[in-house]
Image (cartoon, rainbow, N blue to C red; front, side, top):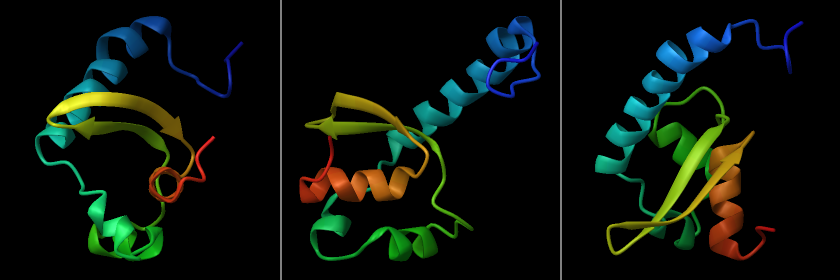
Length: 91
């Protein structure tokens, strides 16, 4: 029986899916999105358009300070969640 609607086997997740996600995360860490965009009043919708995304995606995000990760989170709406962090609404 699938857990949370996931129809992949453990082997597929461990050897294919998760390594691919980690590769994408490492690539994203090389060119992080600046949080200053949110501080200047630009919201998730504008960021989504700039990134040419169809929606505010779910996923993992990493907050970086001085080139070092300081926080890792997951969200159903990553851009909105980053906006919440910047504006102090994150819980």
